[in-house]
Image 1 (cartoon, each protein chain N blue to C red):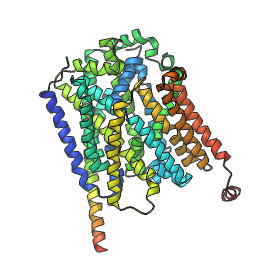
Image 2: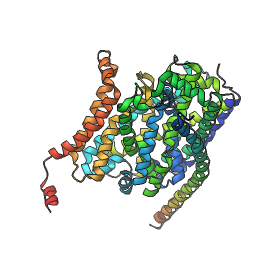
Image 3: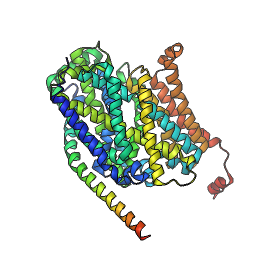
Image 4: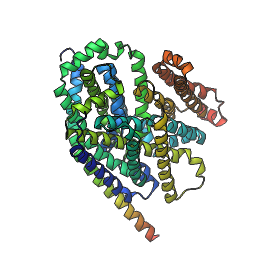
Length: 54
Length: 492
């Protein structure tokens, strides 16, 4: 471990960082999708209204 | 004998496929315009961007070549991942190139070139991007199929059928939902893919053990298995070529840059870069560990590309095998969908630009975008079946990617930061960086010249392409006679 500390640290940094970011992105990414679709819906409704009003 | 259990593992895989298809098809109702289809209406936020970028940039093909790197070069094989992570972090922190690009409001890189270099360069850049990108993507299907067949223990004769079924499934939701379907399915695929990658890596580290892997690399490759500069198959030329390649990819690779262009603003695009950067170390090191574990378990005499899936087929227990295959399918589907969409966007937006003299209706634009994706799918099936891959996979991808990475990165930097850069320089850079890699690929395939290609090697040819593309931009620009307007501008 001491001899190849760089690769040992990199390997465990990958496992720990990746596990953490997966959970975090799973939670926040779901919210991002919800907001993105809501914004697209609102834009669509606004454009339809504007078209109707001429 | 593989550990794949059709009832248990097959159900996990089937459930994953159903959920992905359903999610991909559900969002198609939000697509009303070409802008929704190509850049998701520019509504993508940071975390969805991270999930999408990570899922797109990790396919089965990535897992195969990075594991092959670990098997053939030891830990040093993860060097390209570290270089890419550094490049992405620096670009994200500084906003180098990506800030002016996103601020310009374009949908593709060649669209920006038209403003500086004119419509011909936009068209030529589009052709080069599509050529390099599709040649690169051509090997994805077969390599992905190879992995799935080996891990699940299916007969090789089913490889083509499986590849076709997978591609058709991905094409259906991409054609209907465009970037919106890609983002939503990428998010699901990121979670499934990451869960599989993490669990399998921990299992390998526990079963094979760190000491055993280190000893194997020491015995097979000596100090070169840990240090790329002293590895006889790598050296400074490998590191330099990969530094140039990965920096250019971070700046211009269509699937990466599509996330910046789909981001809701420039700051979001930069955050996606900085926060995803370390993923690129994981992208090389995690499958690299799998490759080293395969080397420790199976020995050095097996086919280096097939070693990792062969090892996993017996090392991963039933139940977990379903998660691994679902993870790999997730990785592959997210990559295929995004690649088809983003290269299709360049064909529509830039190569077909001269044919859109009058403004097309949104309906017509969507029809053409969808048709282009279908054509790309057909090309992938045909090319993927007949191209004989020689040498290692990462090098093939590097050489075909260089066809456009060298010229487009030079053009993009000049476009953003060199006022004097002009169409002569741009044209010369495109020509040089297409000719060198294509010549290399051809002489590598022709038996009479294969030895010459081997003596030059892909790294020197790659480095020469980047340097000469830069030189061509400078020389071409300086050679062009300056117009009166330009002279007046500079003399005040």
